[in-house]
Structures are given as structure tokens and as C-alpha cells.
Amino acid sequence: MLVVGAAGGLGDAASLACAQAGASLVLLGRRVPRLNRLHDRIAAHAAAPALYPMDLEGATPDDYADLAARIETGFGRLDGILHVAAAFDGLTPLELTDPAAFARALHINLTARWWLTQACLPLLRRAEDGAIVFAIDDPARTAGAYWGGYGLAQAGTSALVGMLQAELGDAPVRVHGLLPPPMRTPLRAKAHVEAEDRIARAPADVAAHCVTLLSPAGASRRGQLWAPEARA
Image 1 (cartoon, one colour):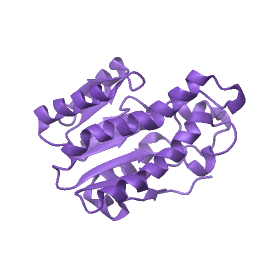
Image 2 (image 1 turned 90 degrees about the vertical axis):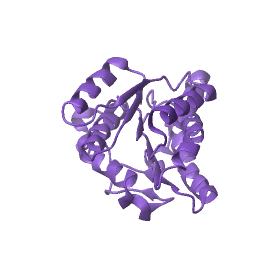
Image 3 (image 1 turned 60 degrees about the vertical axis):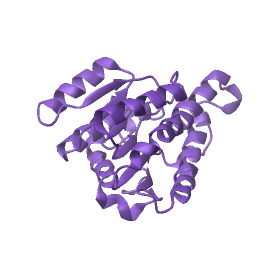
Image 4 (image 1 turned 135 degrees about the horizontal axis):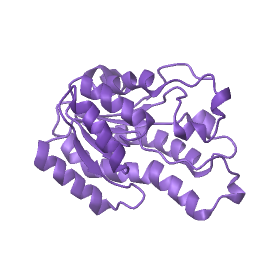
């Protein structure tokens, strides 16, 4: 199982939950010290994960092809990808958004996700039940004012889920969009005052939903955007 953004709030919690469920993990992230700490926490109670440091902002399609080749060499196949990496600089009017920041938000939150997925699809097809799970910030909320490139990327990823599933058809690979409830993470803190954010949940409370979609239990939600809990 490949967790993309493993060093983040949900990524950390989901990696631990997947390891506890018995998954063999490849943890991808750009913060090596955080990856190392997560590795040690998992290795203390489950099979030690493989670490793959990578910065999605600068990675190229060739880098993702190399990632897929290394996973093939080490594991022979890939049972699932959990996309929880995200980049968000804060709420800003589109008119005042720096062009480079706008492009970066679209790239990390949408383009890089697809490039990595595309490179790994041949490996996912080798699994009996391959799963691709995209964590998506509710497009109904992030389509509003000031969400900029980040908000547009959420809408784009939502469309990608249905489009890719339609193209895969009955292949042994399923695609999911997970719309988690508000979580108490550094990303959310950039748009909400933490002291007043009473509806936010701990990422550990949400991690089980990631495990559900990656496991055979998620098969019935093939091609869907799943909001497992009501959100305000």
C-alpha cells in the first residue's frame, strides 16, 4: 500500500491504521524526519514500512515512473494508493493570488496526484482488488470565494474519480473519493481559527474511513465520492 503525504495529519493517522490492519506500506512524503519518526512508531507494533522521500512540487513524470519501478522490484504489485498529500497557503482573492502560488496549488493537489497514479496503474492491475483513494476537501465548500487554486483542484479531483472509474470499467482497480469531515490539521488551521473550530475532528478519528475504502469493504463504493460523516 502506498500512502502519499504520509507525514501529514491524516497521512500519519491513516498510515498507522493501515499498518494495524496488516498492510505492508510504502510511505511517501517530503519531510524526512517526520517519515523516520512515523517509521519507528509503526515498526514498534507492525511490519516496518518502506520510506520514499519525494517532493511532489518538483517531481516529474520520470520520477513517478522510477517510483513505480522501485515498488515493482520490491513488491511485485501494488494493492492500493492513498492520496492525502495537500498544499494550501490560505484564503486569498483570485485577483490577488500570486501566479506561481496558483499553479503550485493546482499541481500538487491535482496534476501530481494524477501523474503518480498513472505511473502506478500497471502495478495496481496486478492486484486482485486494487484501490485508488483520493482524499478531497468538500468541493461544495471549497468552490466558494477565496479558495483559489486549491479549491479548483478539489473540483478537478472530484471529476477525476468518476472519469477514471468510467475508463477502468470492470478492471480489477477501483477509484474512490473520500470527503472526510473537518479535521484538526495544520492545513485547516490556515482557514479557521483553531480556538473557535469546534467541529474539527482528530485525524485518528477519520483514519478508519481510509482503511475501509482501501480494503475489500470499500468495493461497493467504486467510483463514488463518499462523505462518511455529516459535515457542517
